[in-house]
Length: 376
Image 1 (cartoon, one colour):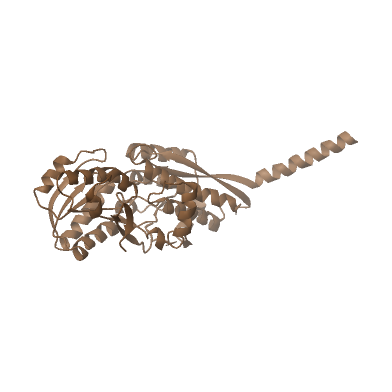
Image 2 (cartoon, rainbow, N blue to C red; image 1 turned 60 degrees about the vertical axis):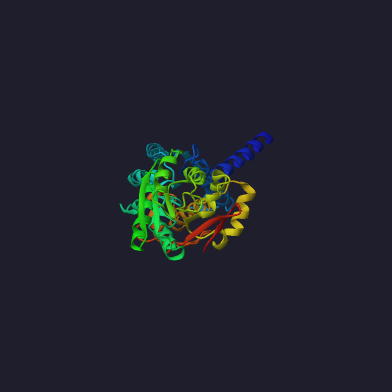
């Protein structure tokens, strides 16, 4: 009798455990950004935002479709390379992740967006800003940050209306992001009476800009706009000092608008002349920014760059749509994304019909006494 009783008890415990396990479901959320190479600091920051969100979501023991969901990150490195970006996008499709946060660069996000559309997986970027991303009208593509039309135009307006500059040279790194934001800036600057005295281009792998800057110096600009990332911008600022261009103002989009720029530029005097723009509000002006940043810094000290609050919010937006659909199946919950009204850390997030964020804000910043400070 005792043996039979033990067997009955064991069977009951096993059955109960089986029911508990049956009620749990692992749901994978993909994240893609460059976590190797010269842009790894951006990519790691983005990934940290997703990891923070997933940790907090799992603590909530969220139930969807009658099952407790355990979220896991499927993190991929695209090295800021379009070919690698499409390869990892296909990898995430094949792995049947429920959704993707990413990519970071426009040059990787745009080609990857077609992959995600074709396999029916939604993705939200909080970093890629080229307006062409949403032009195909994919129902799987979303952005929760201002695009380059806003950033380029905002910088051009500031250069003309606030700084009263007259002669600006433009450089871009030939990436989808860099070239796109530079073209917008140049176009709007011209409408505001600024003369574009020179237009040059480089690559996102270059670090020697002496020939380009020497050519620009001969045109006597009072400003230089650079469409590219902080690794190149920092080197450019140091070389501007060497050429006696320290008093020339230096403009750029969110790609240069990092705390890392301070380290890369070293002690360049030109850093004080930087004006950069990023989509969204400054941390201090975000609805939940200050408290969120304190949590982030405690967990990932010294790693904050720009986009992690947006990748954090993007993760919650995906899960919010799943909850409203009561399903983690992309076919079922993707239509709910367009109906989003989510109060995030960065803003209240809602979408236009093409997947762009409604009423995105923009922040202009400069650098003073070795610190990045907001101008608005």
